[in-house]
Length: 271
Image (cartoon, rainbow, N blue to C red; front, top):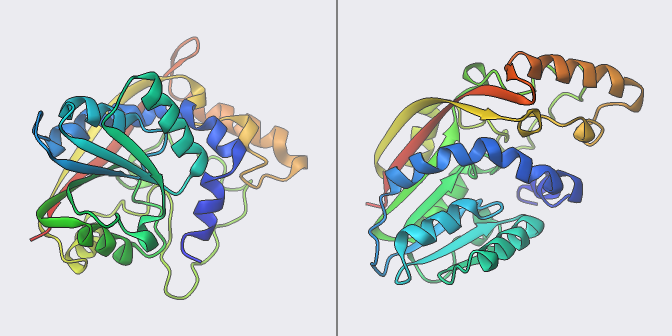
C-alpha cells in the first residue's frame, strides 16, 4: 500500500487534533510560497495545493486569485480536509474546493492544472519519483510546480527528533522500492533536483531561506503526543523532561519561543 504509515498517522484523531498548533510554524512559510508561485489575480488559472492540510495556504491562494481563479486542495488526511472545508466556509471562500486523495497514486484529477503548489506537503511520499511524475502529469504543458520543504535537520535545531531519539523506536527501514519519508526527507538539494529531473520537470530552481518564528512551545512539541510517537509508558516522564529542556533552549519570554527555520522553495516547469 502506498504511503501506508503516513496515511495512518495523518488520519489519526490525536495527531490531527494537534495540527493547528503546529501551523504556527508552517504558516510562516506561506508568504514565500505565494511569492514564488506569483499567481495572476483575476485570471482563470487553475491551481492545486498538494498536501493542503488544514487549508490555510489554499484559502490564502484563493483570496489572491480572486473569484475567477480556482484552487483545489488535495490531502490524504480526511480529518484535515474536513477542517479545511470548515475554514473555507467560515471565511466565505467560494473558489476553493478540497479532495481527499493520495497524489502518488491518484494523481491530480482529470482536468489539468496551470500551477501546483505545496507547503511542506511533499516530503511524505514513499515513492517520490512516482509522486512527482504524477504531479507533472496533472499539469498542462508549460505548467509550474512550486513547493517548500525543510532543509536538513542539522539546519533546523528546533525539531524534537534529536532530543527524543533515545525514547522512541528507531525508524523502520523502507520496504523494497520505497524511500524514507519524514519532514527532512527532501533536505538534500541535489537529491530533490534529481527527483524533479527524473520526473520530467525542467527549469528547476531553488532558493534557500532562513527565518525566525516566534511561537509557543506547543508549535514544536506536545507531551500529549509522546506515547503516540512510541515512548514507553514507563519513560513518559523522562521523555517529557527531555522535551521541555529541548524547547527551553529557544525561550525568549514567558510562554514565547523563537525558532530558527531553514527551508527551500523550489520552482520547476512542465516543459
